[in-house]
Image (cartoon, rainbow, N blue to C red; front, side):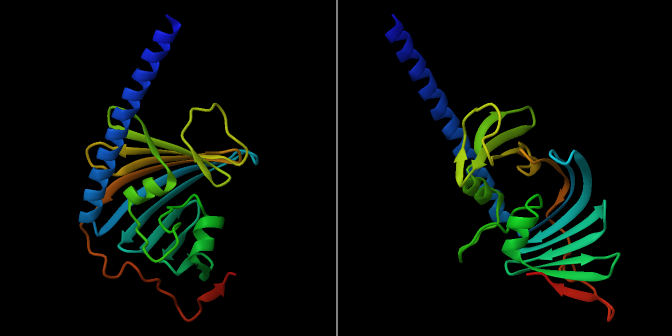
Length: 231
């Protein structure tokens, strides 16, 4: 009797996982089709950054403009004013108040110091693809559930490995990512990053794909602007 019950449970789990896999593939296919159509994108985003160990909470208000294949401009409005201009090779951070531009190597900026910002420059190699579908596949995000308005994906990353289990609590050095994709627009509207040191909640609003971006990827500087190269 117990053996029969165990077999029934295993069959049920297998069928459930098969359905889940099909849904995941369908979602990736839909995202890839949309990625092919989009050449540029802009939106507003809001973040609550909770540094757990420091017991400090910050709210960040910003907007970004992205043009394929690798141009990104971020306008940070609160709690400070900065303009961040990035491509595959360099990142320029314009501190507006102090009239100073800081120049970084792209990989160091996004992967080490400022990993709470959009992670589209986190890949290496010649065949770079900065799309939401590729980001999902590279980071190991898996389809975990459907909500009324969203597809919800999640992954756990620790010491170079990704996990998709339901472990309670965090492993040492683990970061958990949860992504909410709007079912209608297929745009990512919410992202949470959870670790032992910080919790970052991000919400994206007002996506646009049709706009004039001819002068958006420049930083205006005066003769008094100070430029600092950060190693």
